[in-house]
Amino acid sequence: MASRGKIAAAIDWIRKHPAVREVLLTGGDPMVMSDGRLREILERLAEISHVDLVRIGTRTPVTLPMRITPELAEMLGSFRQPGRREIAVVTHVEHPYEITPELAGAIDRLRRNGIAVYNQQVYTFFVSRRFETARLRLLLRRVGVDPYYTFAPKGKEETADYRVPIARILQERKEEARLLPGLRRTDEPVFNVPGLGKNHLRAIQHRDLLTIRPDGARVYEFHPWEKNVANRDTYVTADVPIWDYLRRLEAIGERADDYRSIWYYY
Image (tube, helix red, strand yellow):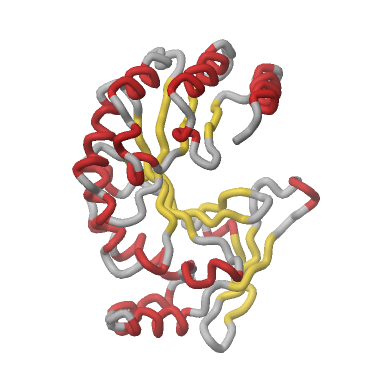
């Protein structure tokens, strides 16, 4: 955990920069802190007039829903000032199996205190089968969580088993998510470019297709709008080979033919 000195320095920096209107408490998981420690940080942020939204990133509604006690939810809600400051929780529900009665109860306690709850899903191989994420969106809205982001796993060697072709994410959005009512498909598919931030995958102008390898792997050049960061203008990466992805699906009992339109997405 960050030391009290580092946290104080961060809050002081925010105080000196009025362009910062939204603050994210993340980690690790900030909900492992005590109620008193969380209250202390929120009190100091509430003293800064230009901060009008505080987000708390946590997976405890899934992994430790009993952490969201009535007392904690009430304390978080006490920092809301309608028209002045909002408090939001952003969680990570990955699969429909994680929508439990305990999670629903934790979300209800937050919402009854005016806390909006959003979900960021990492679109891994293990949740990429057809209609699994569509089912997750349905259940999220049923328990009061708004779909927010669908993340493409980054292209690191140690995460190769989790990665999914960008084409599969685009296919899911076009062929499966489109069947849902509007409020249940409000998440945005994004690719987090290392060092540069989120690129919206729906926006083709954010990337160029450089080539396609024989195994179906697309090679992309991403064009983040933050091109002046760290003197890096673009980011080139090879995507997951589509053929390898389809073979992995077949190994777990899926029919590759059910995904045949994946080749038409770029």
